[in-house]
Image (cartoon, rainbow, N blue to C red; front, side, top):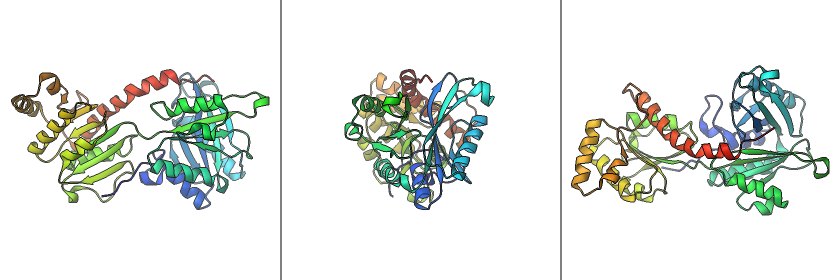
Length: 367
């Protein structure tokens, strides 16, 4: 088994995840295919996507989304006109959603349009390497200027951005819990406006134990979500030939060791082919106590059985109460593997959204 780390953005269409994001940008640049990177630079009021959302547009394809509807259609048209005109300078366009676009959100969105070609190869390749290494990074884009190169920065912000106020803003974005962007307005003496745009590795790590029907259905769903997933089973033949780029397959005879090696605050989902193995994994998870979620696939009777066995092994009631079984969103009917997978994925995403709420409160942009 080998490790594959998700690239920057999720795909807009149905192409494999490994072809999206920075990887897609790198391939476009390497193959001489003109593209435009569209970024939500700032928002005000109700908008389809937050600052930091992206879409990649070429003459014949689109990847990811900035929210759909008329806003996205207009953005695609502008991007393709920039490609047709062989434009090189990044630009900014303001969209009042209600007045000019006709979308019921009613807010205001500022979109940055960055034409990409051979001149952007250096930062695209560097970003590709940082993404593959699971490191956080960002860009400072000079809007309206094609003679100022995009500046890439990582944790060593001050080395790339020598202006202290700008470095402080970039540092704050890197320390935020999710991808975001900031439009820095400047007066004429300071130069053109700047876009600060950061890409963070997924901060929610999921360990998925079991490659049966539900495990495979979950992997399909997780492969399209901003999560980092380690998929573990003892049976190599049960894994599909290809998985999404954010999923790392681990075929091992010692799944409990994967529990011990996992980072703090991880999400554990236990759904193996063996109740005995499920119980050993639950014990290993409860023993570490620093997890975000210990979820066990099963019925209420399975939970009752596990509770009885855990008490017999000396586990205290507060520890047993942290076991979520059945795991998933309550009230969703159906026992089909895809239904269970959607229910579990929704429960996991709720964990992610609890941290995103703080980001939205802190980084809400006024335009």
